Image (tube, rainbow, N blue to C red; front, side):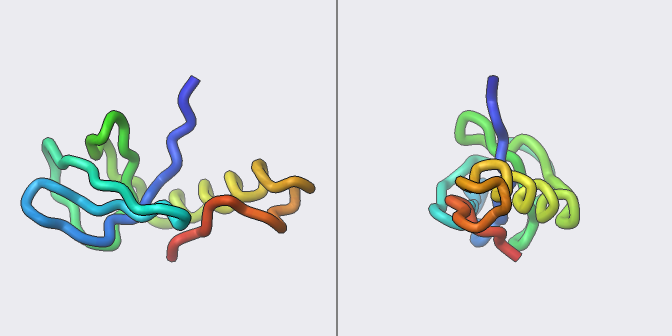
Length: 83
């Protein structure tokens, strides 16, 4: 099973995007589609596969933070919500 966490595009250079996950940044290749700095995306195997509406991405990140915190209340998240 795979858990995909949305990341925010921070930089674009050609067909490469720097995607921020709060605790780290990673490079991902854009194969197809139109993307801009500030877009939330899902990345799989080092490739951007889907754009996610910002309100959905922020809600997913907040739910993820709550789920992985020690007390279930989101007090110690390993991932920051990138706004």
